[in-house]
Image 1: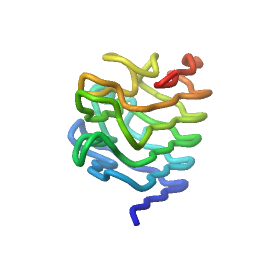
Image 2: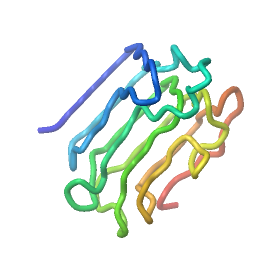
Image 3: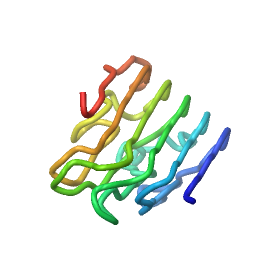
Image 4: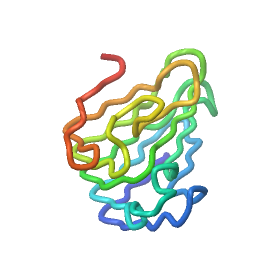
Amino acid sequence: MMRLYAQGIRFEVRGTGHKVIDSNWYKGTITFVSCDDTAHSFKSWAASAVPHVYAFNANGNRGPMVRYLDCQLMGSHSVATGSTPTTAGKIFYEGCRFINMAAATGTSGFLRWTGTVAPRYEVKDCLGGAVYVADVKNPA
């Protein structure tokens, strides 16, 4: 069984190479509730930080179910994907605040991916800085 549940934790990301999580899980659940990694979001390097990394291509085209609920998050998050659609796993953000990004996804957005196919994801009721970002979902 693969499960990680983190609630109410304040993480201090002190540089662009520091990670909160670097997961190669191909199944299971990872949940962050009311967590905050923005202690150093005012630093000049903060927007370049990638403190949450997931490999949805480490064991086939699948990963865990990842949920972020009511979290304050800095930098961007990265998902490694392959060339075919994800068969299991998803990244879900609800009620979160993306401190350094104005868009939810894309090359300059909060959630980014390295493969040719986007992972399964959903962004709902989240803020980019102090403004709501558009709700997005893949597949739509």
